[in-house]
Image (cartoon, rainbow, N blue to C red; front, side, top):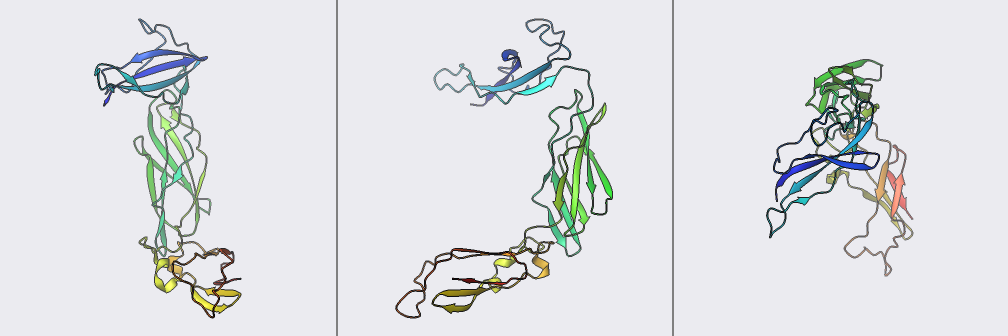
Length: 275
């Protein structure tokens, strides 16, 4: 059934207490616990002490008794300290977005995602500032709203390394810096600027250079500069798979296949031999 509400529990020293019963109020997803509450939960918080909160959902899942409540698993506990508001905790390290790519021979874009800090300092987050530092040490900043958790930075140099860190902002000030994320302005080799897998075309398939009874030499084409992904190719990997059709024969005996995987580490190498 649909969620019919939520329960909020507070935990201190291993003792859990229900502080909010939201059965019948599915749209209510926040509740304030105060040090001077009046009623059942009066004086359950003390300034300066740390408490852990956890929540679980409620629905009416019984197929016989539709008024019977069913309870979900508890969320992970989240600890907070009761104190005066202050600047937020530093956010977690940002992450690289999948849309990071080279857009032209002279330009690239980097996508960065992030999550809010685990503690907003007791005051709502009002925004974020994403800082970017290039290889020359020049730092630029990108202020965004509190609802933004993604930014794509354009007009970057393909193949260069950029460092990013994030700060969160509330009414009391800025957080400390998040851990630094380093991103190369590049994408996977073999893809065109539009994202098409060019290297899978027939013109780039490996060819047989030489066949002997005890070896097979294979050759392939290097990547042209426009499909290197914006970064230097550091090497190739060559794989061999057993064919689904009978092997070619030079006499009555089939060609022996012994080597299954050969790694070519040099970027200049464009051939390999199976033995």
